[in-house]
Length: 298
Image 1 (cartoon, helix red, strand yellow):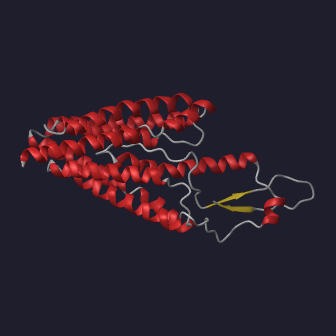
Image 2 (image 1 turned 45 degrees about the horizontal axis):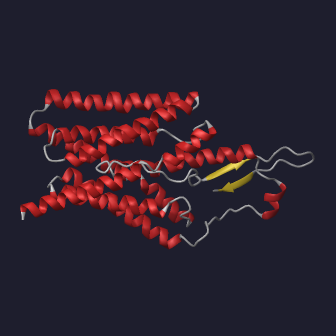
Image 3 (image 1 turned 90 degrees about the vertical axis):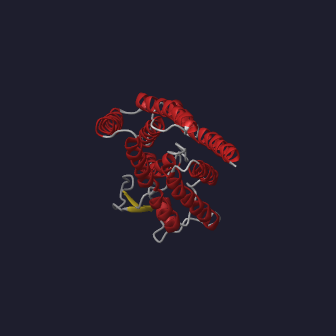
Protein backbone atom coordinates (compact mmCIF):
# COMPACT_ATOMS: atom_id res chain seq x y z
CA UNK A 1 0.00 0.00 0.00
CA UNK A 2 2.84 2.35 0.86
CA UNK A 3 4.47 1.67 -2.51
CA UNK A 4 1.22 2.45 -4.33
CA UNK A 5 0.87 5.77 -2.47
CA UNK A 6 4.46 6.67 -3.30
CA UNK A 7 3.86 6.04 -6.98
CA UNK A 8 0.60 8.01 -6.89
CA UNK A 9 2.33 10.92 -5.16
CA UNK A 10 5.06 10.88 -7.79
CA UNK A 11 2.47 10.85 -10.58
CA UNK A 12 0.60 13.88 -9.22
CA UNK A 13 3.88 15.72 -8.64
CA UNK A 14 5.06 15.08 -12.20
CA UNK A 15 1.71 16.14 -13.66
CA UNK A 16 1.81 19.28 -11.52
CA UNK A 17 5.30 20.05 -12.82
CA UNK A 18 4.22 19.60 -16.43
CA UNK A 19 1.14 21.82 -16.17
CA UNK A 20 2.99 24.45 -14.13
CA UNK A 21 5.87 24.45 -16.61
CA UNK A 22 3.50 25.15 -19.49
CA UNK A 23 1.74 27.97 -17.64
CA UNK A 24 5.10 29.48 -16.68
CA UNK A 25 5.74 29.94 -20.39
CA UNK A 26 2.39 31.66 -20.96
CA UNK A 27 3.75 35.26 -20.73
CA UNK A 28 6.16 34.69 -23.64
CA UNK A 29 3.73 36.14 -26.26
CA UNK A 30 3.38 39.26 -24.09
CA UNK A 31 7.11 39.83 -23.95
CA UNK A 32 7.41 39.14 -27.66
CA UNK A 33 4.99 42.03 -28.27
CA UNK A 34 7.01 44.16 -25.86
CA UNK A 35 10.14 43.30 -27.84
CA UNK A 36 8.50 44.23 -31.15
CA UNK A 37 7.17 47.55 -29.81
CA UNK A 38 10.29 48.23 -27.73
CA UNK A 39 8.01 49.32 -24.91
CA UNK A 40 6.22 47.72 -21.95
CA UNK A 41 3.24 50.04 -22.55
CA UNK A 42 0.72 49.56 -19.71
CA UNK A 43 2.06 46.22 -18.45
CA UNK A 44 3.20 45.97 -14.84
CA UNK A 45 6.11 44.06 -13.32
CA UNK A 46 4.31 43.27 -10.05
CA UNK A 47 3.01 39.82 -11.13
CA UNK A 48 6.50 38.68 -12.09
CA UNK A 49 8.14 40.06 -8.93
CA UNK A 50 5.48 38.34 -6.82
CA UNK A 51 6.05 35.16 -8.81
CA UNK A 52 9.79 35.32 -8.12
CA UNK A 53 9.18 35.92 -4.42
CA UNK A 54 6.75 33.01 -4.31
CA UNK A 55 9.15 30.63 -6.04
CA UNK A 56 11.99 31.62 -3.70
CA UNK A 57 9.77 31.17 -0.67
CA UNK A 58 8.72 27.67 -1.71
CA UNK A 59 12.30 26.71 -2.55
CA UNK A 60 13.31 27.76 0.96
CA UNK A 61 10.45 25.73 2.41
CA UNK A 62 11.42 22.71 0.29
CA UNK A 63 15.01 22.95 1.57
CA UNK A 64 13.70 22.54 5.10
CA UNK A 65 11.78 19.40 4.10
CA UNK A 66 13.08 16.03 2.95
CA UNK A 67 10.41 14.66 0.62
CA UNK A 68 9.32 17.46 -1.71
CA UNK A 69 11.84 17.17 -4.55
CA UNK A 70 9.22 17.93 -7.21
CA UNK A 71 8.46 21.19 -5.43
CA UNK A 72 12.13 22.09 -5.85
CA UNK A 73 12.25 21.30 -9.57
CA UNK A 74 9.31 23.45 -10.65
CA UNK A 75 10.20 26.36 -8.37
CA UNK A 76 13.80 26.33 -9.58
CA UNK A 77 12.52 26.76 -13.12
CA UNK A 78 10.15 29.43 -11.78
CA UNK A 79 13.03 31.45 -10.33
CA UNK A 80 14.90 31.33 -13.64
CA UNK A 81 11.95 32.24 -15.88
CA UNK A 82 10.66 34.98 -13.56
CA UNK A 83 14.12 36.53 -13.38
CA UNK A 84 14.28 36.56 -17.18
CA UNK A 85 10.84 38.21 -17.40
CA UNK A 86 11.81 40.88 -14.86
CA UNK A 87 15.10 41.68 -16.59
CA UNK A 88 13.30 41.91 -19.92
CA UNK A 89 10.71 44.23 -18.39
CA UNK A 90 13.33 46.49 -16.81
CA UNK A 91 15.19 46.77 -20.12
CA UNK A 92 12.17 48.05 -22.08
CA UNK A 93 10.25 49.86 -19.31
CA UNK A 94 10.23 53.68 -19.15
CA UNK A 95 12.20 55.31 -16.37
CA UNK A 96 9.26 55.76 -13.99
CA UNK A 97 8.03 52.16 -14.37
CA UNK A 98 11.61 50.89 -14.03
CA UNK A 99 12.13 52.75 -10.75
CA UNK A 100 8.82 51.47 -9.36
CA UNK A 101 9.80 47.93 -10.31
CA UNK A 102 13.20 48.25 -8.65
CA UNK A 103 11.56 49.54 -5.46
CA UNK A 104 9.19 46.57 -5.44
CA UNK A 105 12.08 44.16 -6.00
CA UNK A 106 14.04 45.63 -3.12
CA UNK A 107 11.00 45.66 -0.83
CA UNK A 108 9.74 42.16 -1.59
CA UNK A 109 12.81 40.15 -2.62
CA UNK A 110 15.67 41.76 -0.71
CA UNK A 111 13.94 43.01 2.44
CA UNK A 112 10.95 40.65 2.65
CA UNK A 113 12.57 37.37 1.72
CA UNK A 114 15.82 38.36 3.44
CA UNK A 115 14.05 38.98 6.74
CA UNK A 116 12.19 35.67 6.53
CA UNK A 117 15.43 33.75 6.03
CA UNK A 118 17.41 35.61 8.69
CA UNK A 119 14.71 35.53 11.36
CA UNK A 120 13.88 31.84 10.87
CA UNK A 121 17.54 30.88 10.82
CA UNK A 122 18.40 32.71 14.03
CA UNK A 123 15.19 32.44 16.05
CA UNK A 124 13.83 29.03 15.04
CA UNK A 125 15.39 25.59 15.12
CA UNK A 126 14.75 22.13 13.74
CA UNK A 127 11.18 21.20 12.88
CA UNK A 128 9.87 24.53 14.20
CA UNK A 129 11.67 26.38 11.42
CA UNK A 130 9.92 24.34 8.73
CA UNK A 131 6.54 24.83 10.43
CA UNK A 132 7.00 28.62 10.54
CA UNK A 133 8.10 28.89 6.92
CA UNK A 134 5.26 26.58 5.90
CA UNK A 135 2.72 28.84 7.59
CA UNK A 136 4.23 31.88 5.88
CA UNK A 137 3.86 30.15 2.51
CA UNK A 138 0.30 29.14 3.35
CA UNK A 139 -0.81 32.62 4.44
CA UNK A 140 0.90 34.29 1.49
CA UNK A 141 -0.78 31.92 -0.95
CA UNK A 142 -4.22 32.37 0.58
CA UNK A 143 -3.91 36.16 0.54
CA UNK A 144 -3.03 36.30 -3.15
CA UNK A 145 -5.73 33.76 -4.03
CA UNK A 146 -8.27 36.38 -2.97
CA UNK A 147 -7.13 38.61 -5.86
CA UNK A 148 -9.52 37.13 -8.49
CA UNK A 149 -12.56 38.27 -6.50
CA UNK A 150 -12.39 41.71 -8.09
CA UNK A 151 -12.17 40.21 -11.57
CA UNK A 152 -15.05 37.81 -10.94
CA UNK A 153 -17.13 40.74 -9.70
CA UNK A 154 -16.29 42.66 -12.88
CA UNK A 155 -17.37 39.69 -15.04
CA UNK A 156 -20.71 39.48 -13.24
CA UNK A 157 -21.20 43.24 -13.42
CA UNK A 158 -20.44 43.57 -17.14
CA UNK A 159 -21.73 40.13 -18.16
CA UNK A 160 -18.66 39.75 -20.35
CA UNK A 161 -15.84 37.17 -20.23
CA UNK A 162 -13.89 38.71 -23.07
CA UNK A 163 -10.74 38.99 -20.98
CA UNK A 164 -11.05 35.74 -19.01
CA UNK A 165 -9.57 33.01 -21.27
CA UNK A 166 -11.19 29.65 -20.63
CA UNK A 167 -8.06 27.65 -21.49
CA UNK A 168 -6.07 29.48 -18.84
CA UNK A 169 -8.78 28.89 -16.25
CA UNK A 170 -8.83 25.18 -17.09
CA UNK A 171 -5.03 24.94 -16.87
CA UNK A 172 -4.90 26.67 -13.48
CA UNK A 173 -7.71 24.48 -12.16
CA UNK A 174 -5.91 21.32 -13.28
CA UNK A 175 -2.70 22.56 -11.67
CA UNK A 176 -4.50 23.21 -8.40
CA UNK A 177 -5.93 19.69 -8.45
CA UNK A 178 -2.53 18.09 -9.10
CA UNK A 179 -0.74 20.00 -6.37
CA UNK A 180 -3.59 19.52 -3.91
CA UNK A 181 -3.35 15.74 -4.18
CA UNK A 182 0.45 15.92 -4.14
CA UNK A 183 0.33 17.80 -0.83
CA UNK A 184 -2.45 15.60 0.53
CA UNK A 185 -0.61 12.36 -0.19
CA UNK A 186 2.50 13.81 1.44
CA UNK A 187 0.39 14.89 4.41
CA UNK A 188 1.72 18.41 3.83
CA UNK A 189 -1.25 20.72 4.28
CA UNK A 190 0.85 23.82 3.61
CA UNK A 191 0.89 22.62 0.01
CA UNK A 192 -2.62 21.17 -0.15
CA UNK A 193 -4.78 23.82 1.55
CA UNK A 194 -4.06 26.86 -0.68
CA UNK A 195 -4.84 24.80 -3.78
CA UNK A 196 -8.35 24.13 -2.47
CA UNK A 197 -8.95 27.86 -2.91
CA UNK A 198 -7.25 27.79 -6.31
CA UNK A 199 -9.46 24.92 -7.45
CA UNK A 200 -12.58 26.69 -6.15
CA UNK A 201 -11.83 29.93 -7.99
CA UNK A 202 -10.98 27.96 -11.13
CA UNK A 203 -14.37 26.22 -11.08
CA UNK A 204 -16.15 29.54 -10.47
CA UNK A 205 -14.32 31.12 -13.42
CA UNK A 206 -15.32 28.28 -15.73
CA UNK A 207 -18.94 28.47 -14.57
CA UNK A 208 -19.04 32.22 -15.18
CA UNK A 209 -17.44 31.73 -18.57
CA UNK A 210 -20.17 29.38 -19.74
CA UNK A 211 -22.86 31.62 -18.23
CA UNK A 212 -21.74 34.80 -20.01
CA UNK A 213 -19.73 33.61 -23.02
CA UNK A 214 -22.54 34.43 -25.48
CA UNK A 215 -23.63 37.67 -23.84
CA UNK A 216 -22.55 41.15 -24.82
CA UNK A 217 -21.22 43.57 -22.21
CA UNK A 218 -24.05 45.21 -20.29
CA UNK A 219 -23.84 48.97 -19.82
CA UNK A 220 -26.41 51.46 -18.53
CA UNK A 221 -24.57 54.44 -19.94
CA UNK A 222 -23.61 53.63 -23.53
CA UNK A 223 -22.77 56.40 -25.98
CA UNK A 224 -25.32 57.09 -28.62
CA UNK A 225 -24.27 56.51 -32.21
CA UNK A 226 -24.68 60.22 -32.85
CA UNK A 227 -22.31 61.21 -30.05
CA UNK A 228 -19.81 58.57 -31.02
CA UNK A 229 -19.79 59.82 -34.60
CA UNK A 230 -19.75 63.52 -33.81
CA UNK A 231 -17.13 63.36 -31.09
CA UNK A 232 -14.73 60.47 -31.84
CA UNK A 233 -12.20 59.44 -29.23
CA UNK A 234 -8.67 60.28 -30.31
CA UNK A 235 -6.02 57.62 -30.72
CA UNK A 236 -4.05 59.03 -27.83
CA UNK A 237 -7.07 58.79 -25.53
CA UNK A 238 -7.70 55.22 -26.62
CA UNK A 239 -4.12 54.37 -25.73
CA UNK A 240 -4.64 55.80 -22.23
CA UNK A 241 -7.73 53.65 -21.77
CA UNK A 242 -5.78 50.58 -22.86
CA UNK A 243 -3.04 51.35 -20.33
CA UNK A 244 -5.65 51.46 -17.56
CA UNK A 245 -7.01 48.14 -18.82
CA UNK A 246 -3.55 46.55 -18.62
CA UNK A 247 -3.27 47.52 -14.97
CA UNK A 248 -6.63 45.95 -14.17
CA UNK A 249 -5.69 42.61 -15.70
CA UNK A 250 -2.66 42.42 -13.39
CA UNK A 251 -5.07 41.39 -10.62
CA UNK A 252 -5.72 38.19 -12.52
CA UNK A 253 -2.02 37.64 -13.07
CA UNK A 254 -1.38 37.80 -9.33
CA UNK A 255 -3.83 35.00 -8.71
CA UNK A 256 -2.25 32.88 -11.42
CA UNK A 257 1.12 33.31 -9.82
CA UNK A 258 -0.01 31.70 -6.63
CA UNK A 259 -2.35 29.20 -8.20
CA UNK A 260 0.91 27.40 -8.42
CA UNK A 261 2.96 28.86 -5.69
CA UNK A 262 2.56 25.48 -4.69
CA UNK A 263 2.37 25.21 -8.33
CA UNK A 264 4.08 28.49 -8.99
CA UNK A 265 2.44 29.93 -12.04
CA UNK A 266 2.72 33.07 -13.96
CA UNK A 267 -0.18 33.30 -16.26
CA UNK A 268 -0.59 35.31 -19.35
CA UNK A 269 -3.92 36.86 -20.14
CA UNK A 270 -4.71 38.97 -23.13
CA UNK A 271 -2.72 42.07 -23.78
CA UNK A 272 -5.71 44.32 -22.97
CA UNK A 273 -7.56 43.89 -19.71
CA UNK A 274 -11.09 44.83 -18.75
CA UNK A 275 -11.91 48.46 -18.28
CA UNK A 276 -12.12 50.07 -14.86
CA UNK A 277 -15.23 52.09 -14.10
CA UNK A 278 -15.89 55.13 -16.20
CA UNK A 279 -13.37 57.26 -18.01
CA UNK A 280 -14.31 60.80 -18.81
CA UNK A 281 -12.73 61.98 -22.02
CA UNK A 282 -12.95 65.42 -23.53
CA UNK A 283 -13.51 65.45 -27.28
CA UNK A 284 -11.00 66.81 -29.73
CA UNK A 285 -11.20 70.53 -30.18
CA UNK A 286 -13.35 71.50 -33.13
CA UNK A 287 -14.44 74.91 -34.34
CA UNK A 288 -17.93 76.07 -33.35
CA UNK A 289 -18.61 72.93 -31.33
CA UNK A 290 -19.45 73.33 -27.62
CA UNK A 291 -17.34 71.44 -25.15
CA UNK A 292 -18.83 68.08 -24.21
CA UNK A 293 -17.82 65.23 -22.01
CA UNK A 294 -18.20 61.78 -23.51
CA UNK A 295 -18.52 59.11 -20.88
CA UNK A 296 -17.06 55.84 -22.10
CA UNK A 297 -18.07 52.73 -20.27
CA UNK A 298 -15.50 50.00 -20.67
